[in-house]
Length: 420
Ligand code: EPZ
Image 1 (cartoon, rainbow, N blue to C red):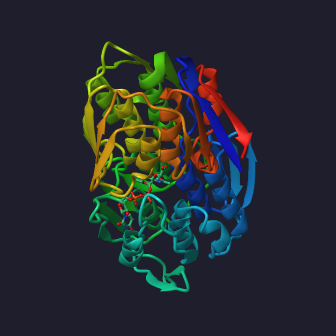
Image 2: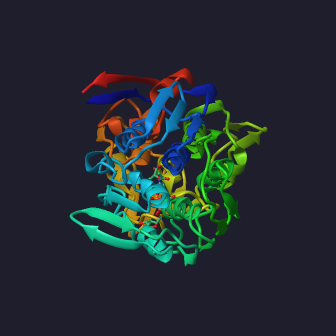
């Protein structure tokens, strides 16, 4: 196990390259199971989550090669059962359900466990598979989906009580591309990562319209071919570095990003009073006088992303004002609050709303990383705090951030990774 020692008080300045998107790479890697041909995927970040996914592909029988961000997959002869011991390690593995069902008309995938951000149901995924004509059973912790006569296109409403589902939309899209006839997904997730997956599938020969909106129309085709695709930039890593620049920066530029995917985050930072300049593929943030507090609510895309909620809690601690953040996607996603309070943060949790009175000095303390984004938020708070902070369970960060500590050090942060 490793931990991160952070010495607070540094000023960040300079430029940093953003990596390819984790949440685009995972479903796109799964989609390679839809063809016997070779697929090349570029800008895949080197993370434990993407490593788990490539292991799952290999376990079901695909040939997988990986070298510095490029993954080549050839899923010629594959089996329909995903390995429990790997799937249980990463909830996102559920996104092999759609491609296995679409290609083999049969899939066995273990039910993902819950996680610290809350219960992670898959009822909407299963609703989608049944709507396409599959029989769905849950047995001994596994989801078993079978469609011996093949899948048939249908109109499916994928909205749940918390709104749209990103991986649920992905799974239905990946199953429908080889179904007979037309599928219409109402209430589809509109995240850029869903659109990136659709672009990958269209390069394979799929017929998809409307990806990136809440209504996606898919015309099933007989088979799909290999292709070559570069995943989009990771907008959540980008947002995390922008918050670092807001809290500690004297001019931080992030490169290889698409500002269009960050509108809600950029609007929120501008409303706080930070100066933001964008070009075709970069964003620069500058302090711009005294920052003001904010009131935010997380929403499905294009609303303010839940994956940026913890980072904005850290930002609110650094702004001498009162801010509120309401979490509507994962109402329990506040594991970072208790840890920030150990550092002296003044945060009051009322249900799914955090009320933060910022401006007080934070002090370094040993804290515990929990989920991926909460851990990144603790690094932000620790860089702002006075003194030394130890962040344990660093593997949470390594799941979703490629070389986060190296990138922050290159901007001037004082931190080192040590054996726990
Ligand atoms: C994706 O998870 C992301 N993960 C998450 O990012 C992100 O937080 C989430 O979307 C929301 O944007 C990947 O893309 C790999 P959902 P996903 O299905 O698809 C409920 C990160 O930090 N729901 O969109 O699993 C669910 O409980 C991770 O990178 C059902 O009720 O999330 C939640 O309240 C964390 N039934 C809401 O919908 C279902 O069948 C949105 O979840 C499915 C979901």
